Length: 348
Image (cartoon, rainbow, N blue to C red; front, top):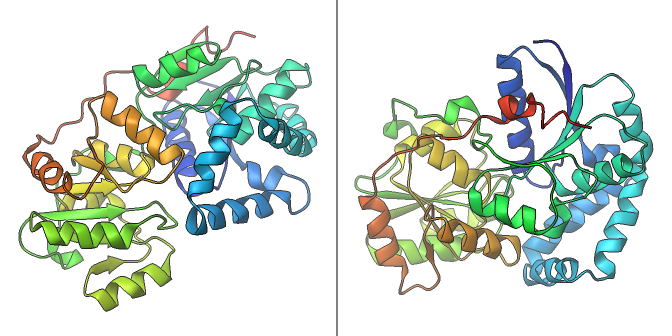
């Protein structure tokens, strides 16, 4: 199949980039060429890097402010208009990309979706634009009336997007790299894991959230031994090591690590949740991040995919139930690549 697809991601954490990479992999399998771009790099000057740095500091130092910001966006406040105005500074780069021959453009980040949708609505981009919704919950910045197609990973996310006015909502299999699809071997000795059930505590590539508290709470239950995936957060890794808690820095072979553990305890409902599900490891939510972490936790629980332990008292039973859960993942929807190359996805 001929064609070129441009994918616009956003390096605010690794989840959006991981989704973009999985879509690239799917398109390559059906013979479609791709180019991948980072909305951070497409913003003029240092704006993108400043926004990314500010977001990291926000979720690390004052995470509750992210809940406030999303509520302001959801309420149609000035915050939304300010973000939209800032994204106009990507217009030249995005118009140039669209003019360079792609069959269509796919966004995996809400900032990219807003910028592309606005350009599509004004007629400055004539190629079809699609958004892949990486999250189970859908905040307003994910949806723009100028975007032609919105791909959702679950019925609840699809309904939420449609309620916000999304066009062409289609259910798809989560965009997770093939290496996360049912690993057959698990090398526990490589990771020096203790005997008995192991709970992997995950806080994304930046290692954000109350991961130290989560690990201590898990250890106190006696149900499972915690191991924390700290990502790039070396400070957290050193603190955990002083506490005597097994901590990992940056992990390259995440599929094998997931195959070795018995349950994943996550706090944001992002890519790690989908990757664990792909490998077949049960997940629970605990000490979730304010804002999008909470809305994702609610949606995952409502979908029957990931229980949410809201308190320390609920944690032991949540862990016990997860350890008893069957390891099963059966995709029932088309891949993003297959859904892209349908008449509805390409309609102008």
